Image (tube, rainbow, N blue to C red):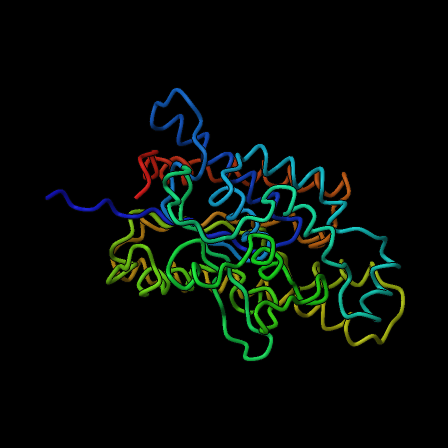
Length: 342
């Protein structure tokens, strides 16, 4: 009996509007898949990966490309055209709302965008492969217990919960100070950014769980390729200064906490990368793990800064980063040649 193909895994960090950098990275990776494997078409990520997981913005992208079958061009158009709708309001308005309601934006703009793509569909999908889709999970956290929770497109639990695509996306995107939390079946959820903004470690555990469609005994030893994509590595000073430059009143605890949260999230993403990278190296499989994350230039872009200048800056900085990663992209592309989903 032929052995089962080793699964190819894609993980996507959170990062607000900087998720545009992740989309650009994925588009370049798909182009390299075409070039390195001598294909006559440019594939989509759902054709190259067997499992996709994301947090916050990364969760939205995961659902769009894995569950809803959107192309990378469609994803980028959504981020460009609807970013202003999602992150609506000027800086003074956002500050006032943050003080009064604890979040800078209401969720309706985001919900409308998701609903326009998913309608009333549930996240769970009885037969993902029939629609050319792949298993997808998005990370959220229970506000009450602090425990992580995966909203899944697969498995018995997801089928019984019947969570809508809209609610799952709102749960993974409920970033503290940016969007309000959401209550689903009596449980209040916020996004998974606290320690899980880079969901790589979560995914390694999930692949070995009874919920997993693959149920691997040792994920590090058994995956065929593990790709982790970040939304930029802001530095402490630049991130903190950038956030403070957009507020007027001083001494507001929520604003101060928000700035600290941004820094902590960025630090945790890189720390998680180093931990997962070590696990693959320690298993003698360093070539299986690939991390792409713009290392400089995005520190001045706020998570909710969606004007045209910010979008152009993200695109330009990401383009420069991709040039420096050409060899890594080529090596990775050889490992994810399109094949029928598992």
